[in-house]
Image 1 (tube, rainbow, N blue to C red):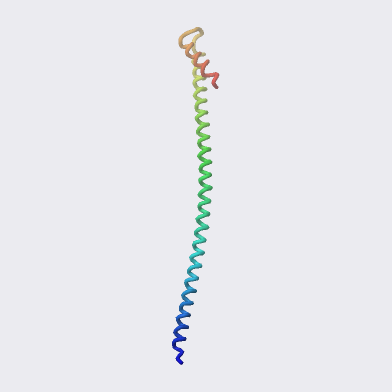
Image 2 (image 1 turned 90 degrees about the vertical axis):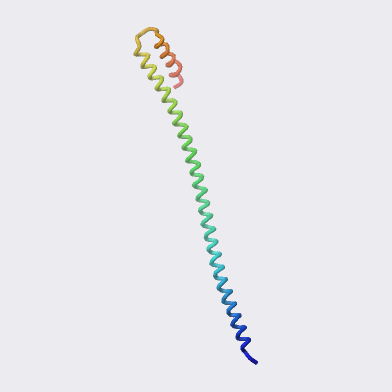
Length: 114
């Protein structure tokens, strides 16, 4: 009886086994790479979420500061009107005049708002 078929079948079986081992190693490496990339993506998404939250807080803080600046600008304008009207009123000669009445009205209307 000839051993050639058994040797040929053994060689083919060894080749299939080696091929299966190579594909198993490649599959495991690819799976590890996929897991690593998935973890990296999750970390970046978490970081992106944190950055978005910080940006939202910064935008709110900026809006609050702009609102405060607008309030201060309005108060500064009132103070300026009051001071200018008061200075002009006291520079006028004593007595009633249309200009003194106008300035007094400005002082009466504007100064109490401060």
